[in-house]
Image (cartoon, rainbow, N blue to C red; front, side):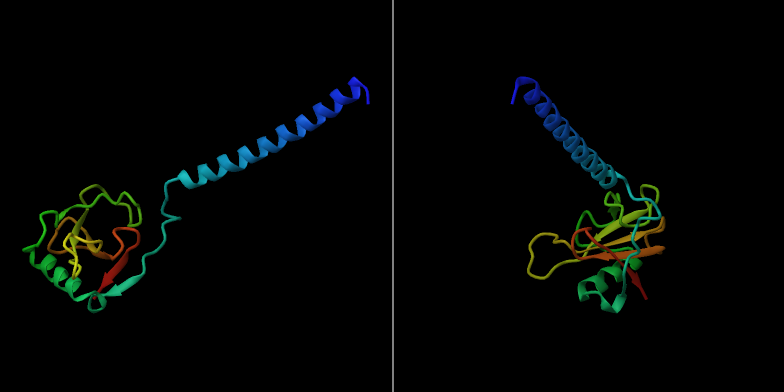
Length: 142
């Protein structure tokens, strides 16, 4: 094999490698772009439902306190919930408020919460229960 053939073979191998790398990068960038997109109304998944009587006893008690306007056990109860996870319907800041549902045997606030939406805290338009610290929500119904 002479030098001319070696160079031709090298160019051909290099071109194949460059094309393969370019393809991998396009696929990777496309995946990142899709994952980085914020959800819109068409992509937000509907929340499953839980009946008030299906909540843990502590959750039922917190729902009663919400409707009565308190008192609440934790200082953060009634504070604004930002919906950064975007799992709840999109609303203006201040629409959602969060409340702690105590977890027996845990010394801290735990992961269970009720998040209610509406501008009248004693008469929420909708409330949601999460037992996994905002990773998923279930709509609370009567």
